Image (cartoon, rainbow, N blue to C red; front, side):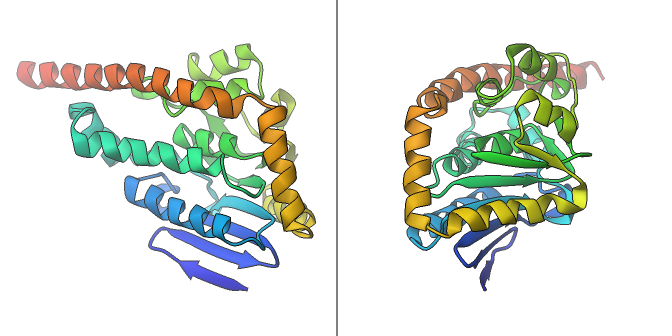
Amino acid sequence: MQSESGKEVIYETDRGVATVTLNAPGRRNALTPAMAEEMLQAFDAADADPSIGAVIIRGAGGSFCAGAELGSTERMFADPLEPAVYDGTTRVYESFCRAGRLRAPVIAAVRGAAVGAGMNLLLAADVRIVADNARLLSGFFRLGTHPGGGHMMLMAETATLDAVCAMAVFGEEIDGLRAQQLGLAWASVPDGEVEAKAMTMARYAAKDPELARTVIHTMRITAGEKAAKWNLALQAERAAQTWAMRRIGRKREQAAKQG
């Protein structure tokens, strides 16, 4: 086995399977721009290695990804169009968009919470293995902001529109069993079996990396519309999300003046 440890992302390869681990359990692996950059580097490494026939994305500490790091989100509310803030948000978006374009098929091994941007990351994968007791929620509305990163399109690609509405607008939270019923996951298994199931599937594809890469490429361009819709969804949601974030900032400014 070969491994490479970054500050908050661990990249490992073993017999044709690359595992990308989000390694910030103290904040339940919530994404920051710096962490997103490390993910992009890991994905580049997987693409550059022709022996990789499958990629697993997982979170350390029993949680998948709790969205965007709250401190960064707070700064975004003040001025979402400020260059450093806007570029940081873009980097987070690029990380899960890049996951959806990896040359090898991608499996998300989901334990614990997947919220907001974490939902986007798991939905970017080709296959999702989810713990029975996982907590999946949109999370944007409860913060007073609009979904971003193609969030609603990604859910609608696999689930029904009323499921998308229930989660994105009405704040419904689902577990792994419900995710499987809705088509948001291939399998729901006991928490302790998630990564083993993901690895079993990944090993199968890794027997023939060249064929696995070719099959998944063909599947993505012929059997699904995600790739074609994603750029449009990113732009549509980004505009509305920027408005919503600035709205929060204005409300806080007004509250500070009144206080």
